[in-house]
Image (cartoon, rainbow, N blue to C red; front, side, top):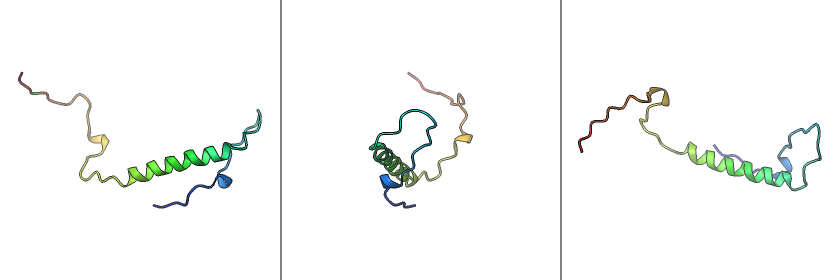
Length: 69
């Protein structure tokens, strides 16, 4: 999955019913954070888990520890 780089001018600001308006550089900050999140998610999507079972298969406390000291 590829996506274009996020442009600060196309990053929507949340509607704030009260309070001062956001700073002029707020959109650039939001775009930078969103771009970073997108990069991290892209890396996670590339991971190959092979035959790793889903988390619903794991049962906490079900391990059998059989070790001799």
